[in-house]
Length: 186
Image (cartoon, rainbow, N blue to C red; front, side):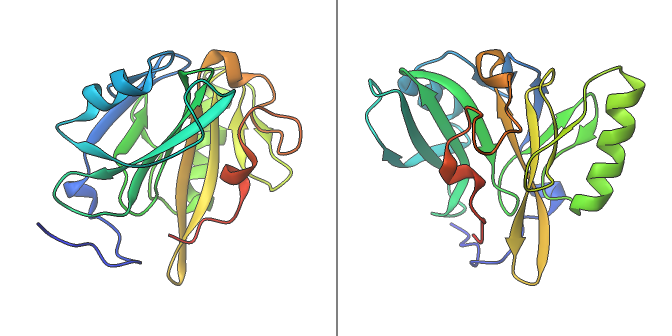
């Protein structure tokens, strides 16, 4: 087992590769699945690390770590009434998630923002900004957050089901839990 230090960033070549289908899935994680289904879908790559709240509560979350690599979070899943509604991918060690070939994880935020602005305008998608200046799109169910990695900042995408897409970039009134809007330093 290889332990990843607190600020170590997984090499791009070593990241698990996932494709995002807006409103439907993030890799093997399909929006609407239960926690048990999510655990089974990622068992070869991720293992459950911790949970908060009950899965019958309005919003609960679970963190997953990379199997055999680290005990630190790689993915955070949020459940609404027991159904997967949101996936946040850790910038340091999470899978690489792509949207039509656009890499969303572990990138310099300003470079990703430029590419995302071009992508949304080319494909006629909306472009929104959170009150924290994070770019996103309700139509795509994407918010591109930033996460500290020692002395650098890297992209941490938050991807939501279509049921959470409306106002997903709104920090105060949107569906994304407030804990996800806090500064991420791990």
